[in-house]
Amino acid sequence: MRINGFLGTSLIEYPGLIAAVIYTSPCNFRCGFCHNSNLIEVNEEVLEVKDIMRQIEERKKIIDAVVITGGEPTLQPDLKNFMLKIKEAGLKVKLDTNGYTPETLADIIKNKAVDYIAMDIKTSLSKYAQGVKVKVVTEKINESIKLIMTSGLAYEFRTTVMPGLVGEEEMKEIGKMIKGAKLYALQQFSNKNTFDKSLESVLPYTVKALKGLADIVRAQVEKVEIRNI
Image (cartoon, rainbow, N blue to C red):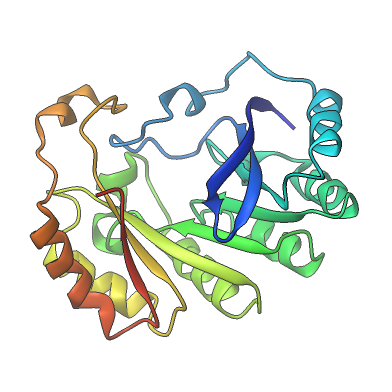
């Protein structure tokens, strides 16, 4: 595991639970709105896995779970075994993923290495390459959505709603992609500290506009949330 950051306690990363957070690198996408630009490429400033596991063991009395995020954690070849170690320690595991490695997700789910999956949906499939700045096989996104929705696990889908990338038409398409999902979150776009500095001139949606976009998909899913407003 290439661990590039560790947060000992978080009240917001795992719904309803107190969690430690682990950050990994690299990522297979290059989203311009990303705020973790130091994790997009391979970050050589790594933390020792044994030290992280020691800290997790020491925190077991005050935390309920560990969240693994990135970057894109599913690029780590030993991710599943690392997650199972956390589970063996008696803690729940949440995975944040972009969903572009469905084969890895399937293996993690099959081996009961995860309790909660949060998958980012960047935009409509027709705009995906524009959003992630690399060539994509969009079937992989749909495959991961189906895997997660049929896994029996707790999960959520979420979209950072950046003007120009996500609008009314994109929300309609996303609604069809995740029809029947338990939870979908719209995350407010921030033009501060973006990977693509040209996006600093893009103004976020107003709260009223965000609520309008949320209403578009509300009939397709069980619950819709708006975050970071």
